[in-house]
Image 1 (cartoon, rainbow, N blue to C red):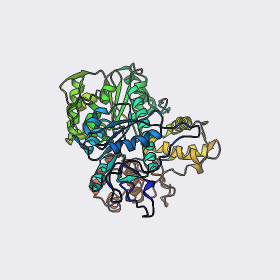
Image 2: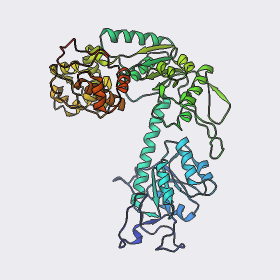
Image 3: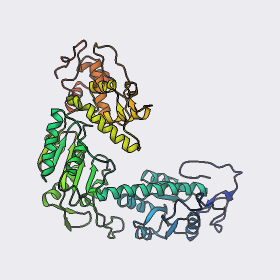
Image 4: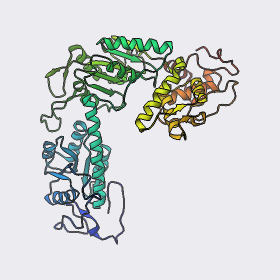
Length: 520
């Protein structure tokens, strides 16, 4: 027998009463014997109370015997159960009170697969467990690819099913808590500070203070890892909108087929044609601030809709012509220069004009290394708050090492290095030997590089920048040789140097400190 879509086999000696039947006949049993054939264990804690108490499971099956089996199993674990016989009944029964859906792949009126697509599009926080008949293995594999939390075929052990339901309930609870944080405008990262006393940081702080007093849209650009979202949150916290919602959307991480619904919401379901109203992230930010991370990654059609929304100060949900007024300030961030993307035809010029009313560019960390001690201290305080302990301090030797590092990954790399150092530190002071995740820095005399490049926590762009920087340094600034080493064209190297702002930081072999750059 198969336990789930993963092909697990059970010895023929295993008695049938070790399994529950989900109402589907097997070769060993006649069709008139559906139902429960084994004892159903109860998942209760030592105090006799179930940790699933209060959660509601929606089960959908055409066969009453299958629903009865699942109901008895779930109620034995102190779940509440809602039943549906058809796909349309399933979708009509979905509400905020449902934690998990268990559905047959085959359902009357609206198929289980269509219901799954609907739920993934419109209720992404709701895990869906699918049940497949014999002969529906291709469908079972397909629903897993389409986002099902788990899929069972034929029969399954009750402990296995309950374990999966329990995990799905926990996932649903966590997702809803995160969404509540999003809707209320709270963020779980604590206070926002702009640490540093260098002339560069002083100028940026003054600029941020000015932007906070104004109410126009802002565009913040800069290399990856420079803290663009941190500055955007700081501006919101110090603006007159600080008591209103703060909603952050990372445009590059939301799937292409979901981004429109996430931003603008919807008023009608495409499968049932029933009215299903859900506000989008723009409406959630009403009265407050909407931060659009990596706005240059928005698809062209979404750019057009966003431009329309900003122009008219109204939002139109999918499935309706009705518009809702929205008062929202937009702070957009971008690693790639949107003006360059506009010239290349990838970003709408009219949208750029609406976003780029106020603008600031954050420099790479290597351009204000004097701020590293202050930034590191603020990060260690934040790390300690997350861990619930006392903040660590940096030994003078560690401060010196951090202040001399070029930081190709910028402040994101610095925080990754410090968080790892805090985890391996045995006392209250971080020593130089604790900075084991520090990316290697070329020796002053051009000797072989030492150290370990820590990649965990870095984005692909940051890793690519590190690879290009270190390879070019190893090649003495020779771009043709660098291209050959990395297996790309020389033109690509020139483009990457410009993209990652590597001009002036590549060392020639034997070059003295302070006069060691290669002109690009």
